[in-house]
Image (tube, rainbow, N blue to C red; front, side, top):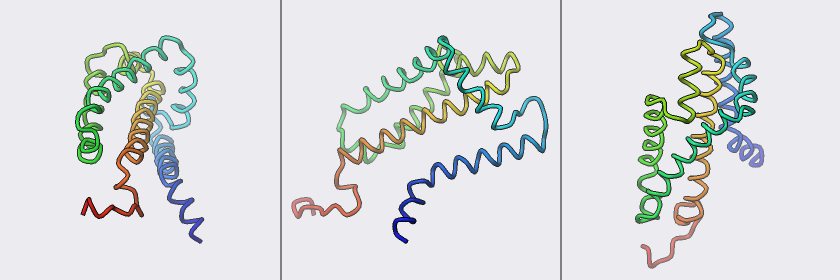
Length: 164
């Protein structure tokens, strides 16, 4: 029973994503408009985006900018930032990506807005999925790093008496 519970806990994010995709698919089929493609159409577009050299360069440019923000933030007072400012870092990354998209610089935002201008809504939604996956991946990596560096935050960690 506990093994099943652990499996469900580990797969909860995946199940949530699949549930959202199912809701999206259903809503798109019910609304049936050209400006709101089905989830399947958007997902089918992802390989063509990732297979295009220019698109891949733009996406990597966005990841590079995110890495620069992380390199600036991590060296200062490392454990305190990892425990106290994780939300601030995530918000900074979101703000950076959003401002990048608004400014239409090279990067994922460039692909998103160009596709929107041309009415390629399947590409627009595919880029939203890709940008979301980048954020989820960075959050998972940051959480793993925090778990390795801030051991007292792990469940079951016995705090030494000198910390009490």
